[in-house]
Image (cartoon, rainbow, N blue to C red):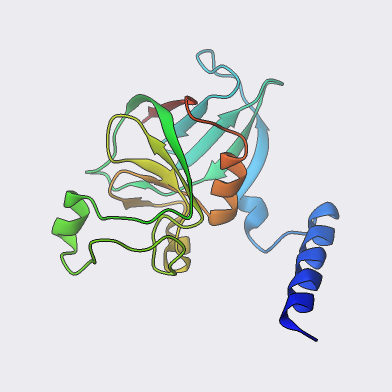
Length: 177
């Protein structure tokens, strides 16, 4: 069979599995829907709880989609409120100064879609700094659920794509302890 046919068959198989509720191991643990009552959270708000290493997307029916994430190292965590100011698919990445100081061997730019690009499949950039909610490279998947970043919020690629399909520029983001 040609490569194109194999890809179409694989895509169809993935679609059928998704419709049947069959997911990759561990994926169900990364994202679930829960009851969510937060007085300050209007539907469409993203709430990040550093201590839980979870991101919540608040829905109108009193539930939230809960995602496992990696948060900043204890010395790099921040609290506050901001908004999404950009949506980027497979973005290129330039290491911020704080990252470069920690790892001076990094290149100036890692191309979007490169296997070693820490932004992964997508990024929601946040107003007011060099932070983002983003996917991850294959080598960093194990960091999800830990305090490992320089202040960004790292998600599984499948989860950042899901979240990006739900939010737009201007979405409110609340980061708590």
